Image (cartoon, rainbow, N blue to C red):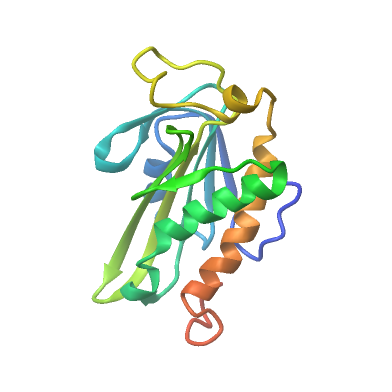
Length: 200
Protein backbone atom coordinates (compact mmCIF):
# COMPACT_ATOMS: atom_id res chain seq x y z
CA UNK A 1 0.00 0.00 0.00
CA UNK A 2 1.33 3.43 -0.97
CA UNK A 3 0.07 6.66 0.58
CA UNK A 4 0.67 9.01 -2.36
CA UNK A 5 -0.98 12.11 -0.89
CA UNK A 6 0.67 11.95 2.53
CA UNK A 7 1.82 15.39 3.71
CA UNK A 8 2.78 14.59 7.30
CA UNK A 9 6.16 15.18 8.95
CA UNK A 10 6.33 11.82 10.74
CA UNK A 11 2.94 10.11 11.02
CA UNK A 12 2.84 7.28 8.49
CA UNK A 13 6.32 7.99 7.13
CA UNK A 14 7.38 4.52 8.23
CA UNK A 15 4.75 2.07 7.02
CA UNK A 16 4.65 -1.67 7.68
CA UNK A 17 2.22 -3.36 5.29
CA UNK A 18 0.90 -6.92 5.58
CA UNK A 19 -1.43 -8.85 3.32
CA UNK A 20 -2.62 -10.87 6.33
CA UNK A 21 -1.99 -10.35 10.02
CA UNK A 22 -3.54 -11.45 13.28
CA UNK A 23 -3.86 -7.92 14.67
CA UNK A 24 -2.33 -4.61 13.63
CA UNK A 25 -2.56 -3.49 17.25
CA UNK A 26 -0.61 -6.49 18.49
CA UNK A 27 2.03 -5.90 15.83
CA UNK A 28 2.56 -2.22 16.57
CA UNK A 29 2.83 -2.97 20.30
CA UNK A 30 5.44 -5.66 19.64
CA UNK A 31 7.94 -3.23 18.08
CA UNK A 32 10.77 -2.75 20.58
CA UNK A 33 11.96 0.73 19.59
CA UNK A 34 9.38 2.07 17.14
CA UNK A 35 9.94 5.22 15.19
CA UNK A 36 7.49 7.96 16.12
CA UNK A 37 4.48 7.77 13.79
CA UNK A 38 5.13 4.22 12.57
CA UNK A 39 1.95 2.71 11.11
CA UNK A 40 0.92 -0.89 10.52
CA UNK A 41 -1.69 -1.56 7.80
CA UNK A 42 -3.12 -4.90 6.75
CA UNK A 43 -5.36 -6.06 3.92
CA UNK A 44 -6.74 -8.78 6.13
CA UNK A 45 -6.91 -8.91 9.90
CA UNK A 46 -7.98 -12.27 11.33
CA UNK A 47 -7.87 -11.54 15.05
CA UNK A 48 -8.36 -7.82 15.33
CA UNK A 49 -8.87 -6.31 18.77
CA UNK A 50 -11.71 -3.95 19.59
CA UNK A 51 -12.53 -2.36 22.92
CA UNK A 52 -13.16 -4.67 25.89
CA UNK A 53 -11.22 -7.38 24.00
CA UNK A 54 -13.98 -7.76 21.41
CA UNK A 55 -12.96 -9.15 18.01
CA UNK A 56 -12.80 -6.91 14.93
CA UNK A 57 -12.77 -8.75 11.61
CA UNK A 58 -11.53 -7.28 8.34
CA UNK A 59 -12.55 -8.61 4.93
CA UNK A 60 -9.69 -9.34 2.54
CA UNK A 61 -8.66 -6.13 0.78
CA UNK A 62 -11.97 -4.49 1.57
CA UNK A 63 -11.58 -2.38 4.67
CA UNK A 64 -9.12 -0.29 6.63
CA UNK A 65 -7.28 -2.01 9.46
CA UNK A 66 -4.43 0.07 10.83
CA UNK A 67 -2.54 0.89 14.00
CA UNK A 68 0.10 3.51 14.68
CA UNK A 69 2.34 4.56 17.55
CA UNK A 70 3.03 8.04 18.90
CA UNK A 71 5.81 9.06 21.31
CA UNK A 72 4.47 12.31 22.76
CA UNK A 73 6.23 12.72 26.13
CA UNK A 74 3.25 14.69 27.41
CA UNK A 75 1.05 14.81 30.49
CA UNK A 76 -1.93 12.44 30.73
CA UNK A 77 -4.34 15.36 30.86
CA UNK A 78 -3.24 16.52 27.42
CA UNK A 79 -4.65 13.41 25.72
CA UNK A 80 -7.89 12.95 27.66
CA UNK A 81 -9.92 13.72 24.51
CA UNK A 82 -7.72 11.72 22.16
CA UNK A 83 -10.35 9.19 21.05
CA UNK A 84 -12.82 11.98 20.31
CA UNK A 85 -10.18 13.77 18.26
CA UNK A 86 -9.43 10.62 16.23
CA UNK A 87 -13.11 9.99 15.50
CA UNK A 88 -13.70 13.60 14.49
CA UNK A 89 -10.69 13.53 12.16
CA UNK A 90 -12.02 10.44 10.40
CA UNK A 91 -15.49 11.96 10.11
CA UNK A 92 -13.99 15.17 8.71
CA UNK A 93 -11.87 13.15 6.27
CA UNK A 94 -14.87 11.37 4.76
CA UNK A 95 -16.86 14.58 4.60
CA UNK A 96 -13.99 16.39 2.85
CA UNK A 97 -13.24 13.62 0.34
CA UNK A 98 -16.75 12.36 -0.44
CA UNK A 99 -19.26 14.68 1.29
CA UNK A 100 -20.32 11.75 3.50
CA UNK A 101 -21.84 12.66 6.86
CA UNK A 102 -21.05 10.15 9.59
CA UNK A 103 -21.48 10.58 13.32
CA UNK A 104 -19.53 9.75 16.44
CA UNK A 105 -21.08 7.50 19.04
CA UNK A 106 -19.66 7.45 22.56
CA UNK A 107 -17.18 6.38 23.48
CA UNK A 108 -15.21 5.29 20.41
CA UNK A 109 -17.39 4.32 17.45
CA UNK A 110 -18.31 5.84 14.09
CA UNK A 111 -21.86 5.29 12.88
CA UNK A 112 -24.12 5.93 9.91
CA UNK A 113 -27.90 5.88 10.43
CA UNK A 114 -27.66 3.70 13.51
CA UNK A 115 -25.16 1.17 12.16
CA UNK A 116 -21.48 0.88 13.03
CA UNK A 117 -18.99 1.81 10.32
CA UNK A 118 -15.80 2.11 12.35
CA UNK A 119 -14.17 1.70 15.72
CA UNK A 120 -11.18 3.17 17.54
CA UNK A 121 -8.92 1.65 20.16
CA UNK A 122 -6.37 3.71 22.10
CA UNK A 123 -3.83 2.37 24.58
CA UNK A 124 -0.94 4.12 26.29
CA UNK A 125 2.12 3.44 28.40
CA UNK A 126 3.17 5.95 31.02
CA UNK A 127 5.94 6.70 33.44
CA UNK A 128 4.36 8.55 36.30
CA UNK A 129 2.16 11.21 34.72
CA UNK A 130 4.21 11.28 31.52
CA UNK A 131 2.75 9.50 28.48
CA UNK A 132 5.59 7.73 26.70
CA UNK A 133 3.77 5.76 24.01
CA UNK A 134 0.28 5.85 22.54
CA UNK A 135 -1.00 2.99 20.41
CA UNK A 136 -3.97 3.82 18.18
CA UNK A 137 -5.96 1.18 16.34
CA UNK A 138 -8.59 2.07 13.73
CA UNK A 139 -10.98 -0.18 11.87
CA UNK A 140 -13.22 1.23 9.13
CA UNK A 141 -15.66 -0.74 7.00
CA UNK A 142 -15.02 0.64 3.51
CA UNK A 143 -15.72 -1.69 0.59
CA UNK A 144 -17.26 -4.70 2.34
CA UNK A 145 -20.44 -5.76 0.54
CA UNK A 146 -22.00 -8.07 3.09
CA UNK A 147 -21.75 -9.04 6.74
CA UNK A 148 -22.45 -12.20 8.68
CA UNK A 149 -26.07 -12.56 9.68
CA UNK A 150 -25.39 -11.71 13.31
CA UNK A 151 -23.71 -8.43 12.26
CA UNK A 152 -25.88 -7.28 9.37
CA UNK A 153 -28.34 -5.47 11.62
CA UNK A 154 -25.72 -3.53 13.53
CA UNK A 155 -22.83 -3.00 11.09
CA UNK A 156 -22.50 -1.45 7.64
CA UNK A 157 -19.87 -0.16 5.22
CA UNK A 158 -19.39 2.89 3.03
CA UNK A 159 -19.95 0.80 -0.11
CA UNK A 160 -23.21 -0.67 1.16
CA UNK A 161 -24.55 2.75 2.09
CA UNK A 162 -23.31 4.79 -0.87
CA UNK A 163 -23.06 2.24 -3.68
CA UNK A 164 -19.53 2.93 -4.83
CA UNK A 165 -15.97 1.69 -4.33
CA UNK A 166 -13.68 3.87 -2.23
CA UNK A 167 -9.89 4.20 -2.27
CA UNK A 168 -8.59 3.07 1.10
CA UNK A 169 -5.17 4.71 0.55
CA UNK A 170 -6.82 8.07 -0.10
CA UNK A 171 -8.80 7.86 3.14
CA UNK A 172 -5.79 6.83 5.23
CA UNK A 173 -3.53 9.57 3.85
CA UNK A 174 -6.08 12.35 4.34
CA UNK A 175 -6.86 11.14 7.86
CA UNK A 176 -3.17 11.09 8.84
CA UNK A 177 -2.65 14.57 7.38
CA UNK A 178 -5.47 15.98 9.48
CA UNK A 179 -4.79 14.05 12.66
CA UNK A 180 -1.09 14.96 12.89
CA UNK A 181 -1.97 18.67 12.94
CA UNK A 182 -4.68 18.26 15.56
CA UNK A 183 -2.60 15.98 17.74
CA UNK A 184 0.29 18.42 17.84
CA UNK A 185 -2.09 21.17 18.97
CA UNK A 186 -3.55 18.84 21.59
CA UNK A 187 -0.20 18.10 23.26
CA UNK A 188 1.21 21.61 22.86
CA UNK A 189 3.84 20.66 20.30
CA UNK A 190 6.43 23.39 19.88
CA UNK A 191 5.94 24.67 23.43
CA UNK A 192 7.25 21.87 25.65
CA UNK A 193 7.57 18.93 23.30
CA UNK A 194 10.52 19.93 21.20
CA UNK A 195 11.77 16.37 20.97
CA UNK A 196 8.48 14.93 19.75
CA UNK A 197 9.84 14.14 16.29
CA UNK A 198 12.74 12.09 17.65
CA UNK A 199 13.57 8.92 15.81
CA UNK A 200 12.69 10.28 12.39
